[in-house]
Length: 541
Ligand SMILES: Cc1cc2nc3c(=O)[nH]c(=O)nc-3n(C[C@H](O)[C@H](O)[C@H](O)COP(=O)(O)OP(=O)(O)OC[C@H]3O[C@@H](n4cnc5c(N)ncnc54)[C@H](O)[C@@H]3O)c2cc1C
Image: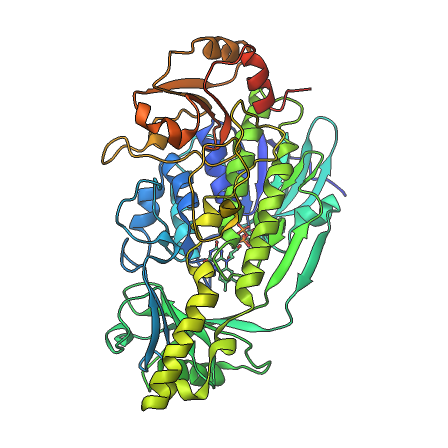
């Protein structure tokens, strides 16, 4: 590659400002790491916002980054607008089944969550993350630039980026993260392969405006309307309160044009209603994961590293989890307190989560509207009523795991990580594998169980930016702070005078990582506190 003369410097180069690259920029910026974000799109004006469900774990990360409220305020549908999913014969037809409290979208405060989920179109999420990241002094954003080449050596990585007018620049950094989506340039440059398969069915997401439609149907508010119709197979919902809608036509004909898309939407609505198409976005479900997440100084995150079918809403959320995990580890490496194994633990911890997301989403894909639709469901007489009752039973059996996902979202942790250990390991609990039922666990590797300290203050709010030792009605353990200072590990202690919470965490001392996962727990201070910290930072032999 012929390199342009001019060279910019930063600690980290992030290719791609989708939800994942932007979250990583926030994570690094919050830890005073210099980074430059390179993104070809000048604005977050996606023609077709794919992601809509931001799960509680992602929202908790945004709370810690101080942007959760801004994201909520910029969502097209007001916070708490609906937490329902409806199955119907058409938007104006018969209701078959209704689920409330789906995806943990309810705005009623619950003890196990610092933040509920949010229904927010991807472009609005990106818009807020863009607007707020510019307030972080160590983050530079290069809108209108694409990464076109990468070279690395022992001391750093050089990226060549190109502007829309063909101008090229060189950027030198210690690390490069490819958050540049499914066609990742970084992945190709690093020679990393995706393994897995694609689903042959072709789907199309259509964005349209339909003023007045939300008042013209009897199904009530819902974030998803699944349409069980013998002619058209799909689901739909609102993006904002101004009449913008999305619809996914599943198994769409190869020749679907604007006219047939309009007809399909009319069938899904069940009667004529004025609509205006804004975009048509074809997509196929993919079950793919990168064989490696790291090549030297280059890392992959988000869709660049893994892709899953959208059923359950795990794609962007899994990538946001990658950014949270990788962010503190890169910061530790740059600030000099990472052990030699810390950066490698990124793949070790995150790849199994991507594999599980793929498995959950593929399972959800086995039964969609096409498998549930029957012509008699639309019948107005007794035959139809009976068919709808039987269908509701089948829907409950097959779609519950997709609509109630906290068991997977909050229950997934890193029990097999080389970074975690315990004096009180967790017994293997098969219920923890249930995708719908979340059972809080303070076991090493798990997400720290959440508690409210008062109505506004979350336990997560008192955690420091580095490691935090929770002392749960136990003697102060000052030796931790000394051992951490010796290793330059950012460290805080927080005393919880709550003996009644001991069983909740499963130890009197809980060492919490910067990403709110448990590194270690025990009832006594270990003899060698330094060894526990070394392990948590990837410095154990
Ligand atoms: C129909 C549908 C519905 C979905 N719903 C959900 C949902 O509800 N919840 C959920 O979590 N997920 C959902 N997903 C998945 C979600 O959209 C993706 O997982 C998510 O967009 C991945 O984010 P990302 O930042 O990794 O990649 P992307 O969003 O693809 O962003 C990559 C960025 O990199 C930029 N880029 C590309 N090439 C370069 C380059 N050479 N240099 C620099 N930058 C580059 C791109 O312009 C882009 O901005 C859905 C997907 C589909 C298809």
